View 1 (cartoon, rainbow over the protein chains, first blue to last red):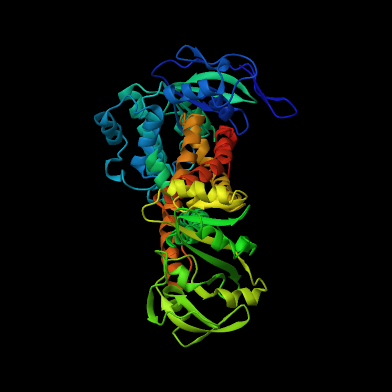
View 2 (cartoon, rainbow over the protein chains, first blue to last red; view 1 turned 180 degrees about the horizontal axis):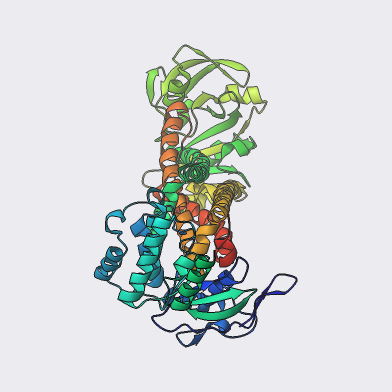
Length: 230
Length: 364
């Protein structure tokens, strides 16, 4: 898959080939401008590749119209952003319910929603507005909003980028639990190697290309080596 | 989605209030201006009927709104009309618009005028109309605080008020026919002849008799329902009302257009979020339109309430004015306010739906 943007036609992504299996938790790492976010937008159907194909549950979304990609996004994709991106006028519950309404009430009944809220530790915060929640709590609401419709894949764009280490740890733990307990497929972009180590597979990117896939073990090992050398 | 719309409306109270107020203003202009025009006109036409005549004879091409009619009818025709079989009573009337109280005055021959059901029913003073005497009706007397014995200047001429009569018939000031004719230099001319059929006569037969006698004159049955349809009698009135409605709707349209256009730029990131959640274009268009409909609905209801208050104030402050607001008028105000607002929100809604989600999400 290749994606070019801008007047100079500089490729933002080039010959990217990536398969994400059901139930996987993948982290994509790389420096700023390496194309991580572009890759995530392409996977989410927000952008269309210049060349190549993207399959979500067997559907080639690269050939779909805007409205068809919107429908795929609604039915199969959940987004988590670095800056939470909750609607400020709605409560935590309102934000979660909005996702369900857009989806068409979602697959989950109120018990399922409650279960997700319990996993995310949000039971007592449901009537709070985003401005009344801490950063970590806001991100947990955003995660709840992303998974409440039980999407095929959750795309998390630097979910811990705006959080302190304590809240980052909690959010990563939540994502891990969602992956472990619900089998939720997650693709997470991160700068943070600690965050990446939460995932079961780490992909490294540079200059719009995937460098090499590495396992969690390999990454941990490499980090350990670096620490020892320094 | 309803929660989101209500939350958006609540979260921007100043914008919501100003938008609601502007829509309300448009509805008020539509209802009050239209109401005053049609109310006063219908009141006038109603009082024309209240004279109690069966037939109204005027020169050809005249209007039942006597302010637009000339004094070109020979008063001797009253005698001819009296001779028509089936006619019981005829009274000649000279009408003149008086800028002093912004209304018509009637020069009447009280003896023949009082043979009609709409005769002057005195509430105070005496029923005398000679020389420089005048009789005014109850509403004008209350509005101008007039009493018998006081002087009233009409057409740069001082008249002494002899009595106050019950209101109901066409004008609020009655003068002696001969005096008004002299003042206007139309000694043998009148504006209109009111005629009444004999009690046992067939009014249709009498109408045909009068028509045969006066083939080239304007002859109306006072019972003619079209007489009350102001729009059919006053040229330009319909156009005037349409103009007022269009201006009011434009006001609502532009306010909503501006408010919603500003809103979607404020909410660019939110629209990006909705798109990332999979909200379709229809969902976003629906959200913007529903929000504008709610604002316009509130504005229209507020406009109707304000119009009703204005109507009551106008009636108290200007008793000679009538403001007509029927249920149909109020419903029209509501519907037109909603239509204007919805149209105003269409372009912003379209812009919002077409936003690039990636750019919208990165909007600061």
